[in-house]
Structures are given as C-alpha cells and as structure tokens.
Amino acid sequence: MKYLDIEQLRALPTDEFMSVTPFPYLNQPLLYHDGFQALLDNMPPLEMFDAIIGKSRRAGQAPHDRHSLEYTPGMPVPKPWQDFIGELCSDAYRGEIQRLLGARKVEFRFHWHYTPSGADVSPHCDARREHGSHLFYFNSKESWNPAWGGATLALDDGGQLDYNTAPALEDFDEIIEFESIGNASALMLRTDHSWHAVRPIACPDDKLRKVFIVVINPDSLFWKVRDRIIGKTIQRF
Image (tube, rainbow, N blue to C red; front, side):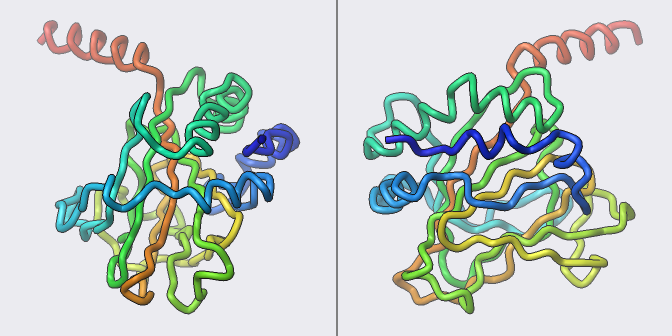
C-alpha cells in the first residue's frame, strides 16, 4: 500500500508555494484514501505518550498542553505507520520538501500530538532552528464535530510582530482557518512571521485532537559548521 501522493507535491511550482500569504503554506489532502484510513485505524495508543502539561514557552507564550510521542527507529508502532514513515524518509519526499522550502538539505523528526479538551495552541512561530513543519490530521469527519475546534489557524501580523513575543489572536489582522478534519495536511515554511495557533478545544472527554507532525530541520552538518563558525568568532574577542 502507498500512503503519500508525492505527485501532488511535484505538481506544485516552488514560486506558487512561496507566493502564498501571510506565509508560504499548503493545506490540502496528500494521502491516498486507503492509506489515510489504514493510518487512522492504527493510531498509536495513548499509553505510549508522555503528558506535556504546563511547560513554559518562549517569551511568556501560553503552554501547549498535549500528549506527545516522538518516533525513534525501531519503535513498536503499528505497521502502517512504519511504512508511512519509511515513505517520508525517502529521497522523493525529502527532495520535494527541500525544493519547496528552498532548503539545501533537511532532516526530519516525527511526532504524534494528541490534544485533550480545554487545551489550545497559543499564537507562535516555530523555532528558528527549523525550516518548517508538515502536519497530517487524523480526526475523521465521522468522529469529529467541527464545533469542537482543533483547526490550525494561519495568522497574519502584517509583518509587524516580533516572533519573540506572546500576542493574542486579537492582535492579528487576519485569521485563516485550515481544513483540519479528515484527510488533510498542512505544510508550512518557518519564517519570523509564520504565526499559527489553535483555539481552545471543546470536545467530549473521550475524544482527542490527533496530529502527526514532520518537523523539518537543517541537516546535522549545517549545525556543526554553524557552531564551528560561532566558536571561531567568539575566540576572536
């Protein structure tokens, strides 16, 4: 079984992606129907997750409370997830991500986030060490009521806000709500103005907002070279 429809990424011109405002993003289904269903039917169990509650964030931003699981090679996740992650580690996917994000070489980290009722994602830009992120949503239209929330919001600050601050939703000029239910994904380029958030979730206690996140980082060689340059600069002073 194939999971990722790589041809949809190949069909997107780089300049078209980069011209999207308020920051470059792509919000559309990228999984084959059968692949999406197989992943949805085999989500990792909550018992594998760590509860991240009340963790402080940069610049006084509100905590992003959630249950979190970071993938490591050999982790006993269901086979559809092993196969899907294998596709994401392929040269084909890596090449399209590098092309669209204008990155020379990238490495990936993989996370599942399950978010309970009452939690939200405060407005923020991702860390500067990241090129971007690719979110895959795993709440089906049959099991999730849109009134419960959970949609990713792209926020337009008009290029005015310092990313190292803690603004409220009311501080933004425009709020764009992503499609986040059913077979949907969101690829986002990280910039100092790529603000995004999720409003407080109001689902029943037996429900969770479920997202799988590909964190897109520069490769480790980049950081070694950067640290070496910084080290040499410090030694001069």
